[in-house]
Length: 387
Ligand SMILES: *Cc1c(COP(=O)(O)O)cnc(C)c1O
Image (cartoon, rainbow, N blue to C red):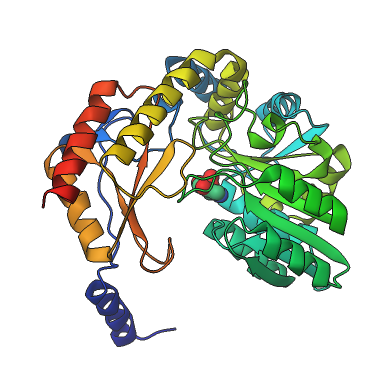
């Protein structure tokens, strides 16, 4: 283990680079406004896009499950922790995702570090977008498969890499909505390359679930791509407003993962109130069209006016809108200045994003108002353009 001096030194180094992370405390539900370190601020950095995390229907479902089943699952699902709500939720998700089956994981992180290694071996080659989430990178590293990265959404390079590869199994790993850039992977192109070169697609829909398509089932189905030609994972802690994750797959694949994904069987089952809240939210998905419309209204408004005030928001096409500042220290200074004005938009620094692209990662929620957006736009214009 590192000795105390080495640990202190590592902390000092982070501090010198303006990369030291720390926690802020929230003492309210995660909504349009939150109480942060005791102060009420406009929440511009939550993945609770549809406002379900404090929804009365989800809370009632969780409360009823709490009374019936208690708080903890007590064990892995393969031992005594397989509460019947797991089955109900898996069936509801499979129906929604148009797959034969579904397997729950306790989080998106655990799904990615469990499923990717289960799908590959030392003779496999993984082709991964440069900007994928750290949990998928960790899954790739654990897998011991050969890992080849392609520049963000660069289909020409991906094709060259696939063409060159002599690997027995090929797996393309990408997100549909990129978590830090808010742009979209070219799924139809990725699909044709996968078909042409005999690769499988592993698609993380964490930020598309709840939003993509008329029923919030994500970008893959919304693009009308064949459901059986990808392995899709989705998370339940973002737009779904609960916690956990799922893999939408065939019955055989479910059985295989249940036997091979270590993060599935070496992990305690989700608590019943969490499962019940997820189930209530998934059932609501087809009815939330007006909520999605309201979200898109804010997204389009913010996009339009951010362009007007000339900030760099990359190719965002979703509720995630990066505002690239570049310098780490300046990014954190702006986060603080916004906070002083009652707006919370967390600065994101490397290694979460590439060097030199530190940014404010802003996200819209359906519950935001146009007045909220104006407040944010005015503050950003003043801070960034008139400093
Ligand atoms: C948030 C996120 C995860 C992790 O999901 P958790 O349920 O929070 O562990 C995985 N992949 C992507 C793309 C994410 O944005």
